[in-house]
Image 1 (tube, rainbow, N blue to C red):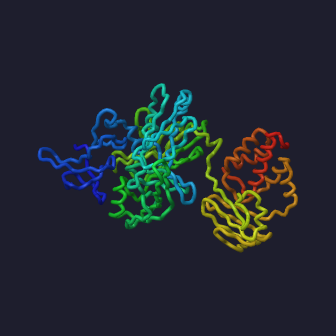
Image 2 (cartoon, rainbow, N blue to C red):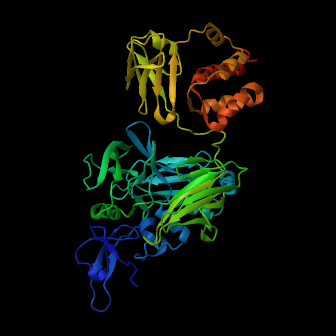
Length: 532
């Protein structure tokens, strides 16, 4: 059988070599590169790549490629999985409402391997368009991509001996941005790149990147402009445009559009859902406590896709007697495969790990909210709220969409997107942050509470905090700092905060008192003031 079984034509259809036309360009179903048909008299017709001297790892896994030395064909099953997924996972990250950056995240390694790299003083060298950057393995979490290089190299130095896991997870490098092929999952803060040969689902929102701001035109596909991706480096500045993409229905045009990018369009998708124990989800990572050695996940089976994990012996199929399956939590990579579509269909869905410290210092996204008067500087909404009532007009801003409501005796008086004028003392300002909850602001007339704010006794703060029943918002790192202090110094405060810690949320009305507690902690540790 021919090395390249078939090609993909401009309509997304499979074309076998005997049906192909000479002079036309087709797409390789394995590496998504251009191929051309070779018509023969003494043997069967076949597809072949054009000659390339320095191949990328993506090109080196293709069965239609032969090479020598450092560029010989890659045969390892696990190597092919990580290469098909683009090497290091690539994330399109939104750092405000309309600006994006590309970051490649280094997947977690086994704890014993991370300790070896630390003991050896290993440095990670990233080479992008000939420019090298060196990082310590201790503080390396992600690398910000700066160019559109086809493939970004990653190499570890000071290694006393090679570690297979490091080679497979890190040293294949990073497949660069490809505007013609790449599709990203869509979340509120961006999303990670979909592995080539994976499934794209009708009705689900994705992100794509284009080199110009013109809307793509494909029937039954909705596009909306989301923002700008900028590269700033030694070679100058370059702007790209981020669009959301949603396939409305499957037809000849949409199938061709998706398959030309190297994916398959389907109408229902399998889902893998973590069930127990609780885990922190960061992109593809499922992060568990070190004492939680087993996890249960739910597989919503809607197709013939199967689940595998990466083991020391290659890929191992997970036994699924029912919809719930069990796996260990320390360094397991779960793959969802659809080999009926493509023999290289191996999308990494989750990497289970216990190596991150998220349960101690959790990197939750907490939106920042600011307000500004006509003649005043911008302030955080959590500080000096009483001054809001002295302004004739205030402007509220955040990196996410928000709505403002003014309530008087629980009746809606005014609603707005950004501006509130002449806020009266008997009115409440409600800032609706959508999925992140609401912030309630009202004029504080209770003299006892005002006196408490000037009192440095932590017991008085606890009395106030215990009564806070307002809408809840996500906790942040400053909360965790106080939580650690309370564990050792205040049993009563720890009891209150522990309930919030379990939910990962706290009453918005308690925020300003938590800030004051932190200020007093800092003063105490500096030798100023006394906390009871």
